Image 1 (cartoon, rainbow, N blue to C red):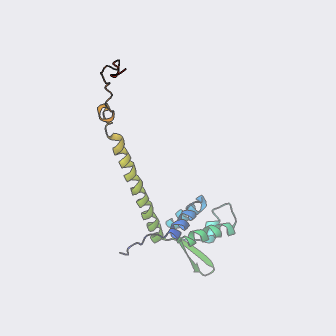
Image 2 (image 1 turned 60 degrees about the vertical axis):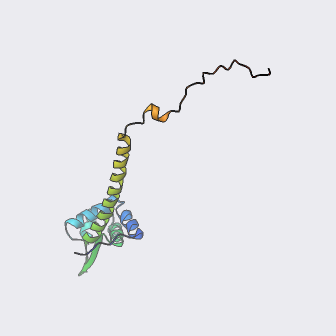
Image 3 (image 1 turned 90 degrees about the vertical axis):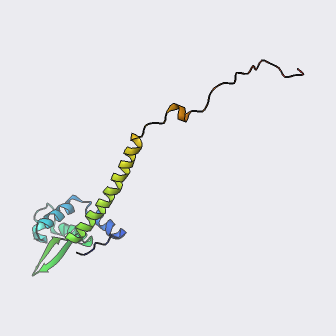
Length: 136
């Protein structure tokens, strides 16, 4: 089994940028299901072939898909290694936030401090202030 290395900041930026558009997420989903030609992918969208090629190029730059030539066609398939690495990153984020929420839950579940623990002694001095000092 090959150990996955963590994504660099630049790789994280490219992955999130690539997944920020619904068309690219759909292209990735389609290429996870099966390898497809860019022209087959383009026929599925109401945009130009060139626009689909640009979406594919963004996914390829993020290493989420792999493109290869077969004759005159360019075939595209998802890159399971990069998808796994991105998924591991998201799992770490999820773990971080779940631990923070769990800690917040613990803090909220703690009973409030009792009034006697938090207030200062407010008893009044009962000495007679009406007395005057000697020599008055």
